[in-house]
Length: 329
Image (cartoon, rainbow, N blue to C red; front, side, top):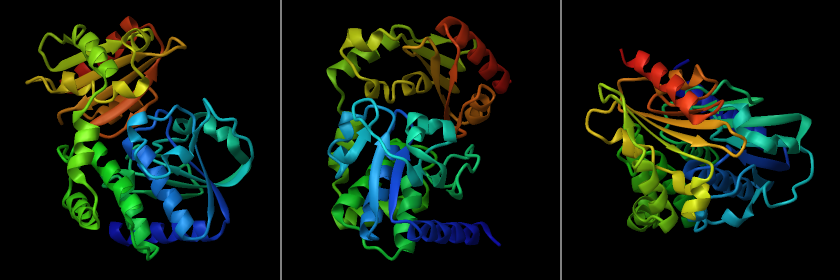
């Protein structure tokens, strides 16, 4: 059976899973990005069209810049909402591994059936049913195919959510994951009425004053390896408060290290309230940062990945920069 045939079978298995239950809990990864939020919303749309009920949840606070999306307010954060219940059927989207679901797993029934839909190559297939397509630029690309397999016609709300996921996970259709299929889907979504220019301006161009101050702080700390192939920045747990920023304002800051001419790997180290350090890695192509992140218990994509390390930042950065340096030899 070819890869395309296997994928087609997995989409049918996903629809069979959905047909077999009446109500679902839909979750995505902690600190959700554009693809995670959009994927949650697309699944909710699909379930509604198929006559199913859904509760949408996430461990983290949600990025306000995504609030324009239909049903954004239906996604409940476990930081602010008192969520209870025990769900027998769960759909997880855009989660590279089970741990990335975070505290939302507290809502799972002991033997919950789980549909795992994801595009990360490091996904270990933790679901009862798995639809994993590493070739997809974003999880919403898989969900677009799922809506087609279900015979559903997209409306503007759903089309906007899918376009948002594609736009953010391809860096505005600039990253190497921008495939002909991505552009084909984007064209169809624009034909439905999605305003691509407005979304690009809102999601990629505009920034809050808090983010601007964070960026100023981060760039003042930008450091390079001796051969200039590695660039890294760091943010302390107090920086967000002092800059009047929120966690979502950290989005994209790592790219400022990578975008320097000659840099092969850019890293952003973020100190957490618990003293751990979250590292975001981006590669220009020479290094497989997913493999590097996996060696520290993380994962992701060949060119974009992350991991969590023990602090302090000085020790964590030394370890990870050394590992990246060895990978670049």
